[in-house]
Image (tube, rainbow, N blue to C red; front, side, top):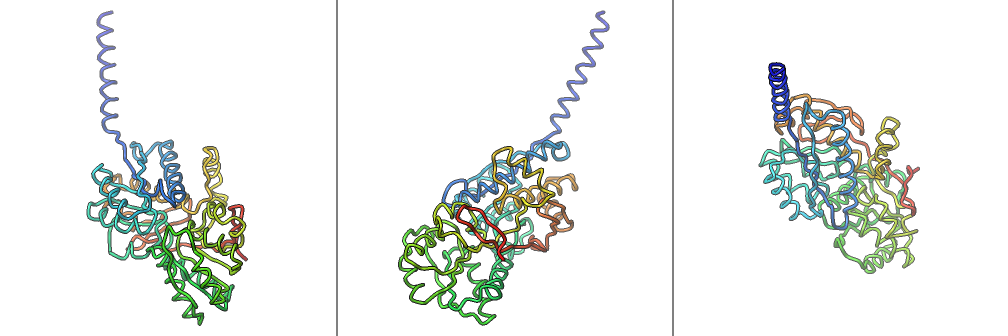
Length: 372
């Protein structure tokens, strides 16, 4: 009996030791999710967060990455460039080598300088400024289209469908908004439409009376706005109050249900360029149901691009058997990926080779429908 117990003890010890070895071999791969948790555009940060965290959760449920578990770590940059630099340095100091984010282009660009220098892989699901990937960096990618795609796309719609008599282009003087406004201006001017106004407002301003008076004096019948929803919501509301009835258009930065909360009925009929509604894709309905089970909204423009950012990052980890950012970056550039946002392929700069935007009619209840 004692001999049997000794053998049993030896076997148990071996099993425990094997388990300990396997546990030691298993690892946790941390993925930073960097964007605005606070501040005026925190809603967009929430879209990125829920998309990325859902991907992490589902990948872990399916067995993780080559036996390793993923962990999402949230960092708040408040869509502020200085805070984004601080966040990027903290991510590096926290020894995290993989980032989903940042969100605002003006934050993503300075953060990307740090990530490239420190060998951190960053995939943004929301930053559209072309300058982010024009520096020849090797570890910087994105799963959304560029302003150089979105701006001309919007401009062609203006030229071919709106055909304004007196067009104004307004922007918020920030990298994202002014970049889009400039891209629109260049294309409409090439088509023979010369804007009667091209000027900026200050992000955070509340009173746009002077701007609206100037728009009225110039008999403006169409306004393109480059920037985010807080300012445009106020411009729309105050325009309605002052009897200014021109048609407005904006980019995905205004495509947020909160613009209807700010502008009310004045948001009805706003034109918005957005990524296609990936939540309407029949192939994504199980995922849509998973979001809804958690009382999360899958309709935001950055939810599915954030999910696919985690997909391509982790598929590269599986394929290479590595988590090294340089190895992953090389694989990202050499492979196509089937994702929730379609088939994705990256060019040498880390941009998608193809991405489609759609023009939507915005409604006062915060919903949208394809524009005619």
